[in-house]
Length: 335
Ligand SMILES: [Zn+2]
Ligand SMILES: [Zn+2]
Ligand SMILES: [Zn+2]
Ligand SMILES: [Zn+2]
Image (cartoon, rainbow, N blue to C red; front, side):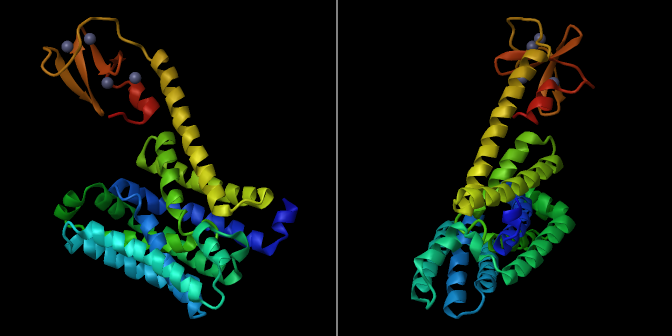
């Protein structure tokens, strides 16, 4: 571990990994909730055009990418808000245009080479400079504070736009803000994970968190923990294994997701055999089956002979009011 920490670019990379590992899941959770998981991917494509301009003009690629993603974020949300059905096509044109322009501009740039193109797309640890790190720290700070302060509004708008609008929340402004946060996170990821892979770190830790936590909040805490563990773990693995950092981080995040999914499934199997299965009866409870139906969290229990039964898949659970529902305990909630 000492040889790793004695190298300046590795110290920088580890700090950058912490910044992006915490930011990406925090922003991504609202994208997942909105059903817009892949918007971060599009932003990564756009950011490459900014990188190209930065390299060509010999200014900062990080700064130029930041300007481009912020403009793109506003444009995307305005397009979604005021645009027609062809908005989807317009997004595709923006995204592919962004990456194509980036590749062309980088190829024309004096210090442009296929090596640093690959670095921007998939991450390259030895490129994390001190100036980058300062910029990343400021940007990550902005992301964390904004999400923390506006989490309730972000949640409400991502959950149900119509309802949020009806309750007087500034829906368009909130969506623009979320898009800008997404773009900023893409920029923070630029050195360690890369523009083509960052979206994975916004999505996968949240998919994992949803299997580990029981509420929005605890799922998010898990997601950030997984994001941090996989990004820092990926940087360390990539150093010792001499593998590209971004791809290593994404593979670790996928491994964490598969492990959590299999784990949740096993726990449910155990839970199934442990939770009291109701006595067998041929009758299948359904709407209007004649028994009183009671809403119990996310499902319906049927009351007869002094107990409550819930139909669930191939078995019937004995549910009692006030007792924690065995299904919701083991699976979060099942729909
Ligand atoms: Zn019945
Ligand atoms: Zn029954
Ligand atoms: Zn129940
Ligand atoms: Zn069950």
